[in-house]
Length: 103
Image (tube, rainbow, N blue to C red; front, side):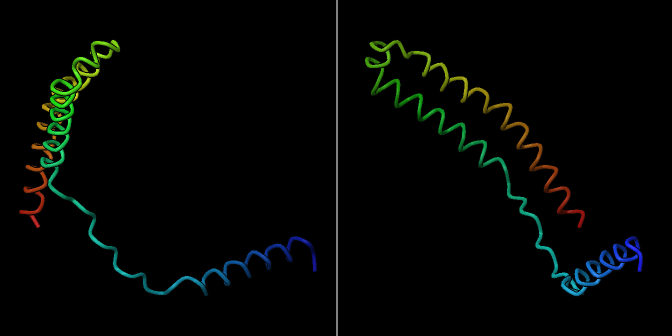
């Protein structure tokens, strides 16, 4: 028996062994999650707004003393960037409703 034929036989044995381990019928795949996204955008905006208000009301003196006023600007930017995100999520949810109505 030549070396090439023994390699083919070895590869065939591996394929046969693999085929024996693979189940014949695969279980059905679960539906992918497709939750409404607008609440996530609103929650993110609320989190940035709340963080900014807490910093502004309770830590303004500390922020000024330690030269960290840019934290307030970061909260404002996070809140404002939430509006384009909200618009995108509203569009996503509209497409989601349209997809589900077509089923």
